[in-house]
Image 1 (cartoon, one colour):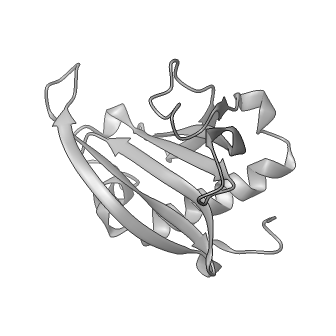
Image 2 (cartoon, one colour):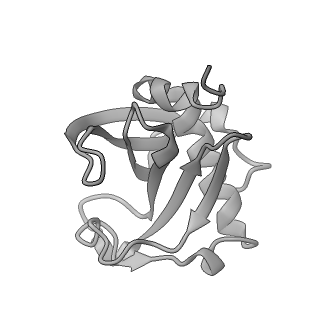
Length: 152
């Protein structure tokens, strides 16, 4: 899939679950949501987004797992891409980052792609199209979308 072939509008989400935990630095609730991104009837990716709703300065972490899915697949068939969504005083910024080690998703994706394996390569268009679909279509991320407006 490239950005020219598929728009975020063409992708569908299946929201699977969500969980609250406690932020280790501020002890506020942290929200983690996850689901599937589908291109028609085909699973394109799994996604996980973590953020602390009342602390926009913490940003959000997007974890995208790309590759083949189904009964005959294993974590060897999938790769993890991590992105940080940061909001400071200016506009929001989304950037591919080197994955955190060890990845909490090692049982889902064997390969964790570094920033230099994504940025400037064809996979980047796919990743950003998927993130756009998640950002625009997952209602559980309404708090994160509000961060683009500067605090009053």
